[in-house]
Amino acid sequence: MHLLCVLGPPAVGKMTVGRAVCDLTGYRLFHNHVTIEPLITLFGYGTPSFTRLNSLIRREVMVEAVAADLPGLVFTYAADFDNPEDLEHLRWLIGPVLEAGIRVDAVELSAPLDVRLAREGLPDRVEHKPSKRDVGWAREHVRELDARARFNTAPQAPAAEGGWPWPWLSHLAFDNEHDDATRTAERIVDALGLPRR
Image (cartoon, rainbow, N blue to C red; front, side, top):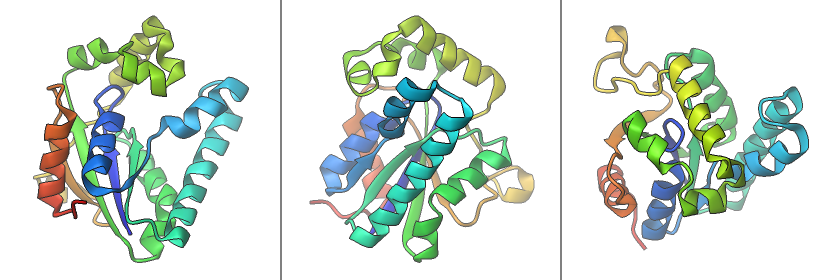
């Protein structure tokens, strides 16, 4: 098994690129809204119950992915790289994979805010993420998150210079401003040497 974490801010294309990687490799896609959508209808986004269950379900999927020996899993996740707690939470979520000694890679996607705001309300996004049907709320949510979080890092810099300080997770960064998910997926598969089906 191999775990590929596709990271980045809202509407950067994590799910779409993740699906394209799966098409090329035969991996399975576990995008973040698989857990968000059922829980948000019951508890409301960001409530203590939502947050606790969202984390527990995601971690249990990692446990079962290891037990099932999936060929590969693409997991999408939004993380504020200025907040060590966010990355430590990611580490906890994928802990069962790390503890099993399974290879884990991270790909961080970036795109300008105006590009991401324009993606809100697109049919594919709304189909897989019903909570995004309220385009006004979704766009405001993206702005709010950007105002309080820095999603992009400088992975090429040593940790001492503010670069990637999490040695347990290899990290590559890709610009996903364009609308060609297959092109980004091809670059990821090639850069990581992933098997193609």
